[in-house]
Image (cartoon, rainbow, N blue to C red; front, side):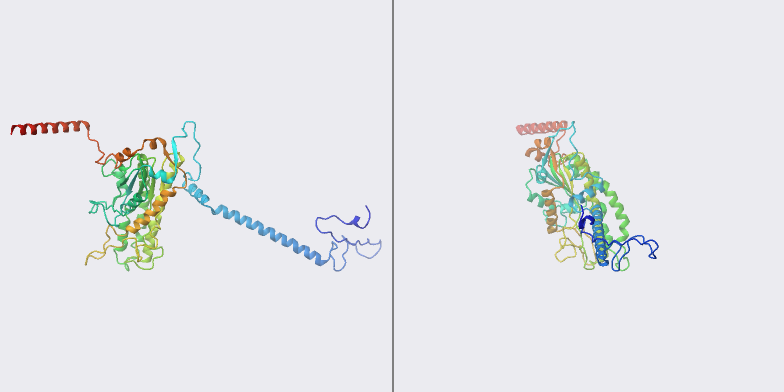
Amino acid sequence: MTGPESNRPEVNGPAAEPETARPAAEPGSNEPETNGPATEPGSTASGATESEESGRYRRRRRRRRVTLVTVSVLVLTLVAVLAVPTSRDALMRLWCDTTSGVCPGEPLPPITEDEEEDWRVRLEPDEAALWGNYVSLGDSYSSGDGAGEYEEGTAEPGECWRSEHAYPRVIEEEFSFDGALGFYACSSHKGSDMLSQVGTPDSQLERVTEHTSLVTVGIGGNDLGFIPVLRTCIMRMPLLERTACTDQEDEVIERMDAFEETLTEVLGEIRDRAPDARVLVLGYPRLFPEQPPGMYYTLSQSDQLWLNSVAQRFNDRIRDTAYQVDGDVYGSRQVGSVEFVNVFTALTGHEVSEDDAWLNGIVLGQLGEGLRVDRASFHPTAQGQRSIAERVRLQIEEGPERVLYASRETLDRVDADVLHTELGGPLDPVNVVPDTDEADADDGADESDGNGAAEAGAGS
């Protein structure tokens, strides 16, 4: 093809300006040779004007900047996603990976050929908690010590101080259990006491039976020695012993370490007795404001912050232990559950130094006795117990972040008579069955006594 357009080069962008050809130098001329076409003043080697070439250069730089910014944003986004989980599921998966447990968000392992698919029944959270008896275990924070209106016979030195305002009583009123409440939490008890008393009538753990559907347990404060720790902080000259609180740090950590094993054993004992139950493990509330406004008696602001941190770290240990045990339950396709109830902030705005406190403060001794840390000091009032009960109620209704199962065989056996008979456990005096030989001997003695009395009456 000929014509003006036949010499125009094809380009992907706008048409390029035609280059002006320069004739080659004649032989013998004095004009120097060049490596390419000579440029006219005001034009570039390509034939474009300087302004056009400058525009193209600016456009190329702008494209490079846009590309660089886009790549940078993508890289930063990728780093953020990898470094920081951005969703509830991602956070849960990170937690499960960290604790080496089975993530509640994951499906159960597949059923094998040796297993029956229908031996378990899937239940809603409230159903899984209400089909049987409710057993409450723990220490003074669960018995309601400090909340007033105690059960007859329990409000004496060395007794359990079980209050009608304690959170187990509130939960009993809020839900309709098929069975009844067995309220066995006891002031001053330790997790180690629970284990050492197994097999005796004093044992809290022996109160848990096969048809228990809900267990609440709040234990560990006395194992940690929290009241003695507080007493050491308070009963000193604040200007002379500034580190009386924090000097206890190493000992507190050792007790925390030891309690993890204790709690694991306690939860194992509960699950051995009630494998279908939902077991709710409570932590402890924060005693002082998040930002203390000033001194509380002899406790400085730093003392209060340290005591808050001890409670928080102890709660973390309790939570981690509960999650580990539940990971084993879920991963091996067992029934029941072990769940942590976070009550650390349940008293926010009503801590011990606030005007409207839901905690008992330091109990003052009589004139001349000075400060005295009584057993009810730093324990929730009736309103504080109601606030803790609210956290328990939410856990019952919402459940853990996984499905819940109970054994079909267990559910088929449960009825009102079974629940009534089991309440209190086999070592409860009400449920103890006397030895047959002893019972026969007693009956014979009673018969003899009765005959003798009749004969005496006939002869008079």
